[in-house]
Amino acid sequence: MVRAILAARGTGKLQRTSTLAALVEQAVTAGRWQPGRIHAATRTFQGIRIFVNRELEVIEAALPKAFGKLKSGGILAVISFHSLEDRIVKRYFRHLAGQPEHANDNRSQQERIVQATLLTRRPLTPDAAETEINPRSRSAKLRALQKGSNLI
Image 1 (cartoon, rainbow, N blue to C red):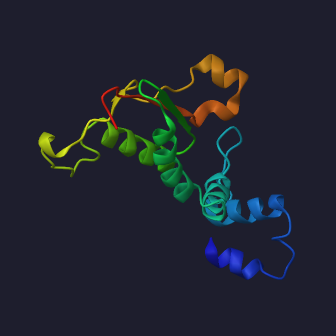
Image 2 (tube, helix red, strand yellow):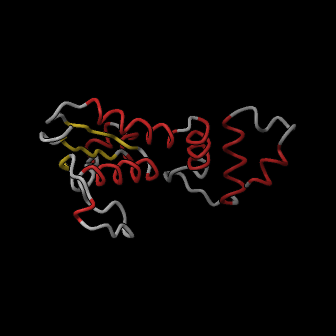
């Protein structure tokens, strides 16, 4: 795909999103994309957007600031729209709840500080009725936690 994009430079094929999408579709699927499925260029555009907007860096910086603004008993709810964001939110929330952050987190319970309680063990996702009304909600995941009362 990168070769196809580099080859298209200077041809005018990169001036419109529709022609870039067609170029990506052709390079990635060689014409195998089927109507009704998520378009082949979706992930490419998502990756470009994540990089340009520095979305992962921004969410990593925003979560501690948002938690710090909460009063005791306050609830922090976060909606993520792709797995990279959701992984960051999940690990940060588990960290605050004093739980292992990932499979290789072998710290003992004494090494963990419980600052919050998870309100959603698993993320809440839209049901079929919601995605019918709002198709963009299909990838949304909601996680929430509550700040503890005996904290700094």
